[in-house]
Each structure stands twice: as C-alpha cells, then as structure tokens.
Image (cartoon, one colour):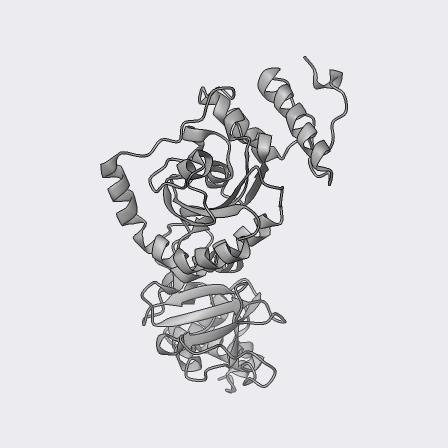
Amino acid sequence: MSHSSHPAVASPRTTSPALRLAGIEQARRTALLEHATLPAGWIAPWIERSWQRCIDLGLQHHEAATFSQVSTPQMRRTLEASQQLVQTAKPVLEHLARAIVNTRYFAILTNACGVVVDASGAIDHSDPRAHLITRVGTDLSERSIGTTAIGTALTELQPVWLHRGEHFFETTSVYSCAGAPLFGPDGACVGMLDLTGIDAQERPELKHLVVQSASKIENALVTAQAHALLLRLNWPGNILGTDADGILCLDADGWVTGANPVARQMVPGLAIAGVAAVHISEMFGIPYEQLFGAAKRPGSALELPLWSGLRLQAQVIARADETHPLQSSPASAPPLALREVEAAMIRQAVVDARGSVGQAARALGISRATVYRKLGQKST
C-alpha cells in the first residue's frame, strides 16, 4: 500500500503531546504493520533505520522485550574491562542524578556492546520496568531489546532522543530516553550514556544534557592516560579552559597518548580511530620541544600552525600543573608572535632537511630567499 493513502500526520516536532504521540502511532502502523514507506519527516531517519534493522534481525514488535543478563563469566569480564569507564563516569553520574532528580529520569551507563555497567539516579527498583534495565549485566543492545536510545546510539554512533512508541517493541513504549555514545582516548567507542524516564513527560532537552555529560566523561578518560603534557585546543577567538576544548595528551617525546573527539575533529591525522601512534610534529608545524617550553609559562596562550595552513590556539599544561585551575583571560601572557611561530616552523624544516635550505624551502613550498629572510639571515 502506498503511503499516499494515509491521512496527514502530525510532525514529530509538534509541541502538542497528544499530536506527537498520534504521529508516532501512525508511523508505527505504516512501517511495522503495513510495511509501507514512511513519508519524510514522520520519524527521525535513524529511528526508521533501527526499526528496519530490528525487522531484519527477526524481532517481532508485538512480542515482549526480554531484558536478559549476560552470563556470569561474561559479566565478570565486562566489569573488569569497564572498570576505568565506571570510575571515570561516577562523578558525572552523580551530577546528573542531581540535575534530573525531579524529572522521573535516571542515568544508565553501558559498555560498547550495550551491557549495563552502572546506573544512577532516582531508580524505583520496586518497578520491574526500572529494575530490569538498570541491573548491572543486562544486555540492552539493539539485537536484544530493539530500538532504544542505547542500542541506536551505539549503532549509529550519534546522540539520539526517543519517545514512547519510537521504541521498537510495544512493551518498551513506556520509556523516553536520550543517549550519547562515548569515545575513548584512541577514538574508538567505549560505551554510551543514557537518560531514561518511565511514563514520563517528553523532555528532548535531555539530549543536550547527555551530550554535555558524555563530553565530560570523554575528557576525563583522555586525561587519565599516562602523559607528560596536556594541550587544550580551540580556534582563535574562543575561550580556552572549557569542556568545548579539544584535548591532546602527549608523552615526553611528543607522541599522542590520547585525544578527545573535539580534538579529532580539529586536527587532521587524528580523525581515524585506532590508528598507529601519531607524533605531534605530524600535525603541527612547531618543534614539540617548544610546547614543553610553553608549559613553563602557565596560563599563556600559544598559536599552533596546522600543516593545512589553519591555526589553533592552545594552552599547554605540564602534568604536574593540571591540578591548578586554568587561567585564560586578557591578563594572561600574550600568545607567541606569528613571526616567532613561523621562524620555529622553518628552523625545524631546515633541521629535518639536514641543513639544506633549498630542500627545506621545497618542503614548505616557499622560496630559498623567504627561508633566509624569515630566519633573519642573508642569502649566500
């Protein structure tokens, strides 16, 4: 049957709760009962993709969802592997619990397979609908319980919001939930953070809260890596020292030991998860030793030239100074002058070329005369 025979349906973005639920129900009938194509805008594309994956898995939307726990040996391995994630996330979960205490929502933390490793908040364990999904070891993956914020966020690797009937199984239509994937220091997905309510008012703004909270966990996972130097990165004009910063951690030789998702978006060479170790010199046109020198001037800003020609501002913090509050204000020491950064970049190119000015000039795409001029030397 063509979708054109169906009556008009309310947009999912409507502010009327009744129309919102009516629109979801219409979408369910069309997609899950009649197996017809949904018109654009009826539900989010990623929800439709998840419904289709559930159908392909042989799941039946009218059957009861089973909230099964993994085996005892698997649970033990899961908890051992997730120990750092759980410890790192615990302070964030505590803050979340306070933020949502009066909303009838609670927080769930899973590993990358969708298995619960922790939960926090006002959880009514006398209600099986809450108790079953917050038990450590419960499998909440898409393969197990169909379309939810947990399974879908882990599959789509993006933040999501689902309300009531947007879940695949009819028995899970009591839930409303926001979810965001969590990425580790190497860029790979390590789990997800979920906020769930039962028979609760729809609060899509929780998607923003869960994304912010996920960023805090990701940043803490990066800084927990062994490192000698921490770089906070942002574009010129933005304030450094917030959760919006890109974060890079380096060892004593300038090798990257971890980066948060923001840094991976900013810096070419870090975008692919799980790649071999990357040296800071492959990303920035500045000797890594200069970064360690900048760390001796706490609070000062440094401009870093990317090899692409773009520039980032950075705050460089030695490992021993990370417990001190960051100072980023107009009173801070001024950033290094552009000519100093350019000169450092050219000097490093000459060193890499074993003293050959001509070879360094070719590598940088500039003339020999420019190399001499920038270095304050006379051409011979």
